[in-house]
Image 1 (cartoon, protein in one colour):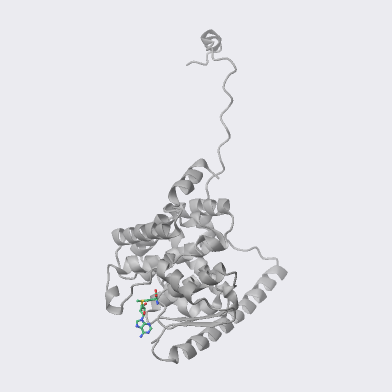
Image 2 (cartoon, rainbow, N blue to C red):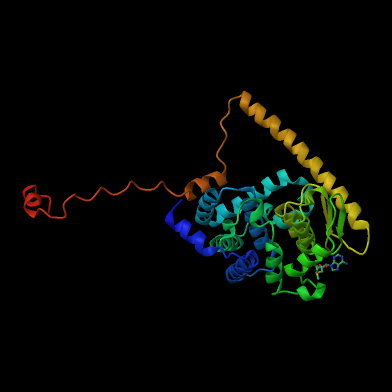
Length: 334
Ligand SMILES: C[S@@+](CC[C@H](N)C(=O)[O-])C[C@H]1O[C@@H](n2cnc3c(N)ncnc32)[C@H](O)[C@@H]1O
């Protein structure tokens, strides 16, 4: 790891994760609106969510710092391809969340406008420079609602007041979680969950009491597809386990629960079919001894990889006396 990386990491990461989340949200909001400013705020949110997932899955801070350096050097096309790859990988490991997270990744399947891609790159760089990768592993972003903070910050430019999209502050969710801590095995239901802050409070209270939140069933729903998508990512970032269902419908009716369960099962079946197909293709390639082709993203990453450190400069001469005469005799001065 280079000295610059160490210095940047030490400078960029405030100790308070909430303050850190606020800094990232403000930097991302500024990057998006100064570069592009389009109303599709799911795009910058998708970038931050994908990078936060990388931070969660990478426990080694040095590896994460090296990745940050490489990602920051990607050009706009490379950054777009990176987003596509990260969301594909997430869909493969969490197909159950795919019906909700689709709202965050569907733009990566569209023909990309260069202006949007440049804004995507600017957003990613802003988040990385603010130390998004300075928190790694399951604990990294596991105890704060980074995505909720981002949603509130970015929606402050639009009409969040219309649907009352103000999320409950963490101090309050923690207090409520402590007052009414779920038991292991409980089913917890939030029909107007936003990004899930109340559920995070409950999970944190369980952990503080030595209970395991993955032993519960977590059901969340929101009318707003973006909030529901971020809540689905949060469930993974917060380590709530696999017994989770996230819906997107009217929380005043039961319908969302049936739909969410059905869509969840369809998504799991689809990914299982895709896995079977991928395994067959890999087996055929292996039998035919075909080399794995380099993807467009691999090419961009190869170019962005920092070059190996140059060899150290030669050691200085033992004596500081400059023997001008000797050099002149060897005609090395001119
Ligand atoms: C004040 S926020 C609170 C979110 C979350 N419960 C918290 O404490 O942070 C209210 C949320 O309810 C959602 N909402 C409003 N009406 C709804 C409805 N009929 N069904 C589902 N969600 C709804 C909004 O989109 C918003 O995200």
